[in-house]
Image (cartoon, rainbow, N blue to C red; front, side, top):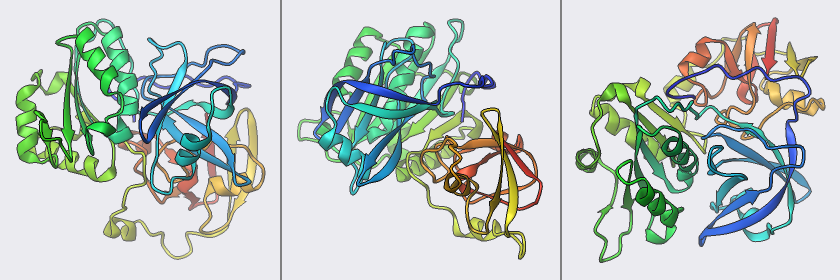
Length: 370
């Protein structure tokens, strides 16, 4: 979801390029299990994106096309090239393949930048971004930090960055450099699960007592000028949400970016079950890239899944209702979503749906994408 100065995304022009073949210019080993992939801009011209957005990398692995979304750590205002950071995860098909096999000079198929974890920047703004990042959740924060420090001279950032140990801190030296170069405007506070003997910072679980102490160390600009951002493991973000609520921080000042599908509350899931007969084969009309497609969606199959099976090349990435790459607007009809985490309440109220977890509940569903 967008935060701060929200602007309606510009309508895409027809024939806009949705996929790019990008050459790997550099691979930076950030930690023992994380690399930053720097892509050359394509010959067709620079790819435009917003700080906080992500790229979807598409790689053939084991004879199957695999897609994964990775947040851009580069800034459109600072960096000439695009860069994403990929951290190994247990049994991570794409993350392990990239860390083990990718080489400088390779070319990857990449989907255009997407994502709503963004803001507009203005040199006249004065605000305080308080960021909570865990592990690879630092990637969109890095893009936003570089952007706000260079584009809003009166704004500041406070980053609370949680990691397993000191060797797993991604961008450790780069963050220190930005903190030095923009002294007084960037405050970085590291929290480690396993701290070394000589560690002078915070260690252990981020709890209520620690958060109170952290808030004493960072500037207090008041609620109206402060926005809270979080990105990291689901458990960390739920914990931070609870802690901020205890601090009486309004929900509308808190924004998060999820990398993994959250656990859906069982009671809510039960409440969301459609009435008998609602889920049945229904025709759905999809409008995308100046074309109109009609597909018959069977019960318990998602709209996106059905479209892809019929050879309709719709945008998608995570297929779990989080990244919003498949987002469209239902201009008529009713759609049930298995997972709504990726959409803000305002987006849901405006009729936006996620086709990867969407099922038609009426016979008049028309969805516009892009």
